[in-house]
Every structure is written in C-alpha cells, then in structure tokens.
Image 1 (cartoon, rainbow, N blue to C red):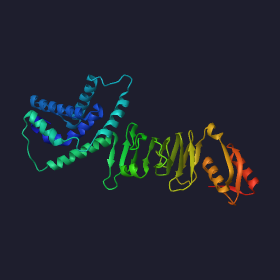
Image 2 (cartoon, rainbow, N blue to C red; image 1 turned 60 degrees about the vertical axis):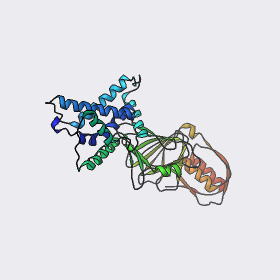
Image 3 (cartoon, helix red, strand yellow; image 1 turned 90 degrees about the vertical axis):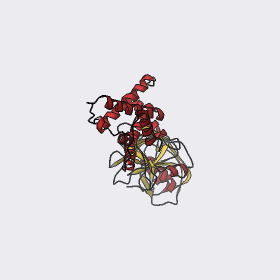
Image 4 (cartoon, rainbow, N blue to C red; image 1 turned 180 degrees about the vertical axis):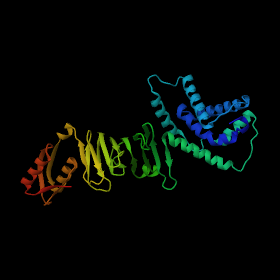
Length: 355
C-alpha cells in the first residue's frame, strides 16, 4: 500500500480500537496504549510520505508488529519487566488487566482520528460509508479481545462468558471467587443473577475454582454431563472429554452429581470422582487414606438417613426393604460390605446396591 492509496480514515476506523486493546494487553495503561497507537500511525504516515517507493503488502500485520514492539520498548524503558517473570506470566497478567479495566466507548475512534489529522494537517473526506467502517472497527476490536481472552455478552440473555485459548487465565468473579480457565475452555454466567440471586456458572472444558464461602448462596457449576455445588472450597472440574466429567477436590467439600439427577456424592479434600456419559452412578476415582480412615457415628438415626450418608460417602446408591428402622452404631469407614452386613444382622433388613 503506497501513500497515494493510504486512506487514514479507513485505517483508523478499522484498526484504532483493536490496536489500543492490543497495546493495553502489554502496557496495562489505557492512556499509554492510546499514545503508542497514535505514535505508530504517525510513524506510518511519515514513512509513507517520506519514502515514495515504500510499499506495505500486509498493513494489518505491519501495524500489529509495530504496536507490539513499541509496547515492549515502553516496558523496557520504564523497567516494568520484573526479573524472574516469564513472558507467558506477563501476558496472563496483562490479559487480566484488559478484562478488568476495558470499558465500552473508552476508546473514541473519532476523537483519535481528529487528533491525528490536526497533528499532521490531514484534510478529512466525508463519505457515506463512515458508519459502516465504524461498525467494522467495533467488530474488529471485539474479535481481537475474543482472541486474547474473550468476555462476550449476549443481548438476549445477558450472559457473560470468559474463555481462554492458548494459555490458562485467572479471572475474579463478582463475589471475589477466583477461577482458572484452562486452554480452550470457558465459563459463562449472568452477572445480575450472580450478584443478586444465585452463584451459578456454566462450564465448557476444564476450569479450576477457588470459591469464596457463602452459606446463604451456594456456588453451582453446571457442565454438559454433571454439576457441582459448594459453599466455599477449591476444586477442579474437567469436561474436556465429551464422554466424561471429572472433579478433583483440593480443599473443603463439594457435592457432585450427574446432570439432572437428585442423588449425588459428597467429595472431601483429596478425593476425585467422575461421571461417564450414559451412566447414572458416579465413580469414586481416588480416595486418600485420610478419608478412608474416617468413621460414622449414628445415634437413633433413621435407616433411610443412614443409607443416604453411606451412599454419598462410597458413591453407590443403597436401598433397604424396610425403612421404619433406626440405628445406633459406630463404624470405621473401611469396607462398605462389612458395614452393610452388620446393619442387616442388627436390624434384620436386606440392603442392596442399586445401579
């Protein structure tokens, strides 16, 4: 593209906002990002005017590389690179900044173009396509932000979606809970409902959760195969495979269930479980020794409640032929079959595992 074909109006309207977002991704300062982008456009303009034979075959790539280099130069000059911090860590930190501080209409393309023209004495040309180009510039900015770490809002349902692409990204939810969205995964939620009604998110792929405790409003994660409900804990839920939902609890306690099923299992710290597509019974994959060595204490407890607690602990549904019995006993959580045998002999009932 030579200077005779350089339409500064169109370049600004196509690239100003996405380039500012791209610079903000590095420098974490919206005003500085705007200055960097203005300087890049100025350099391009001067280059095209001073070098008559200059040609740019790929203007988009040229602008993005120039903005990136100047952003990194700024970080170096200001000594903002910290020793021991990898470039990947820096990028993740910058992405979080963009998500937290970017606001709609913060980047005024018209005002930026006006400043540029005043600085360089460029005479603007009016055209009927201005609104069209302005729309495309907004679309380009949205696509760029989606490529980095995307927050999208559906006008109809007001869902906010957070997705990660090549790198895992941490994000803080409205209640100060923190999620780690792993590559090519996402969560979405309704901000208004999340703040006022219920803490509920929908999951795709693999996400780690550090949930702030709230006894009044439990936190719920809904996947395609299973769901998890907690008061406050730290856990990972993974539905990266189409046929399996996997949960690992790092601290606290969660309730894990097959989507649409009322029955579920309680998982404690160190436990892992999975739900397999087409199967209604959850599988306990890992139970650490500290959990296995637990105990049950029942004091005149109705048998249905006893069986419910055992079912949740061992991940298998237990039913009895009589439900009018009560049990007073202590059990070490070693063998479920031994516990069932003792209960059957004491209460004279028959208990079976249901699939």
